[in-house]
Image (tube, rainbow, N blue to C red):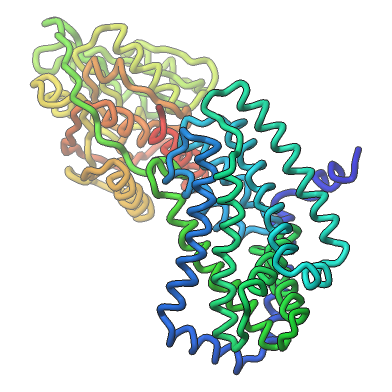
Amino acid sequence: MNLLARVRRRLSTSKLLWIGAVLGVVALVVMVRAVDGAAFAEAMRQAANRPGGVALALGAFAFAFLLRAIAWRRVLPSLSFGQSLAGIHVALGANHVLPFRMGEPLRVLSAVRRTSIGFEAAAASTVTLRAIDLVAVVAIGLAAAPAVYLGVVGWGIAAAAVVFGSVAVAGWWWLRSVAARLPDVKMPGVVAVAASGAAWLAEAVLVWQVAGWAGIELTASEALVVTTVSVAAQVVAVAPGGLGTYEAAGVAAYVALGHDPELALVAALGAHALKTVYSIVVGAIGIFVPAPSLVGRLRLGRPSGRVAPELIAADAPVVLFMPAFNEEAAVGACIRRAPATVAGRPVEVLVVDDGSADETVTRAREAGADVIELGVNQGLGAAVRVGLAEGVRRRAAAVVFCDADGEYPPEELENMVEPILDGRADYVTGSRFLGHIEHMRPHRRIGNLVLTRALSIVARRRISDGQTGYRALSLAAADSAEIIHDFNYAQVITLDLLAKGFRHVEVPISYRFRTTGDSFIKLGPYLRKVVPAVYRELNAA
């Protein structure tokens, strides 16, 4: 096993983050203690008095990344300019908050997740262009002031040139093989290479401006030397944003050019601070803009249309099913409370037993219900999925389900199905908060209200009870409903049906807290399992 593999085995990502964070704090403390506070304050006053200079510095820095976005688009023409710019800025921002340059892969991730570009094309183009960037850093520094550059960097410049050059060559061959197979991938031409080099010239404008605020007058070539030395040093940065490394290299470059070391530290800190603010702010924007965002959809999209209702047979029943797990004490009474008919239609009561270890199945059959036994406990979402499928198989006029613990009133079944049978809705939820609540524990009431508010925001509509256990679906809605989580169904089935254009209404119901058994809902496990399921539902194809 080689050294790199051994290091990777010993250092997890979390450990790397901690190491980088600690070193970043140490570097910050050292620099704060070393910097001349009065000189730094004066530099900040100079910047505040020259808003045009601040705008020029930030504008030049932003222009550098516009050039890099152009270069990336020359290699990947199918990548939009907006997504190219966003991916570059996301990586830039992440590099300023993560150690070890861990933000670099986010450029590839942004392109892959937000466009139709494949991983290999995004990765090969990114590696190649970043290597060209670094080769350009060395070339520009040597061209601007070779004696000073070699004096500051020493033999490290030779090693850096070899490393950067090797990566560039390897990336070039990789990209060439990808371009041979994919027609929408191009090799970097003169424009892409020139844009990569010109980006460093634009960044040097920021260094030149900040140095002036610190009382250092730089020539153009000196600004290029400081820029390229500082950037080259960040390639091996450990702390977030190369904190400490950037300043040390920058001060060394300033001193080699004959400038005061105390003012040099002020200038290096000021330039780094300005770059960091820009990077984090614009990087955060790049996560969300342009659409689609890197984090995916966080709210429900608008449905493309309404679903046409199915024709229901005149004698089609209403199927009421009850998912049950170890409910022997309550299931029989709950079944007996269900009406025999609603709106002139027969009611068929079904219990979906989710692997109960008690007498739930026996009590359900004694009470007159049909029973489907899942055999082993699969979860409430799985039981509801089976019940909906059975209702569709029976060609029901409406498929309704409620908990088997007696909390929800089976005798109010007609109230639940009336909007469906009248053709006013496809999906009906019984709202406890629109009806009468006999008793609900305070922490559960608060939890229900908070989660319901969150669902309302995500679903882009007012919902009064997002966690209700009493729901009715038309035959079409039951046939179309997809429950992607075995643990629960509450939020995902609502988002699924709304996204598909089914009409939803809430009706008031009465509610009383269970007097037997135990609820499976615990806030911690509930959030850990349901929140990712909601995210997957929102971002389903």
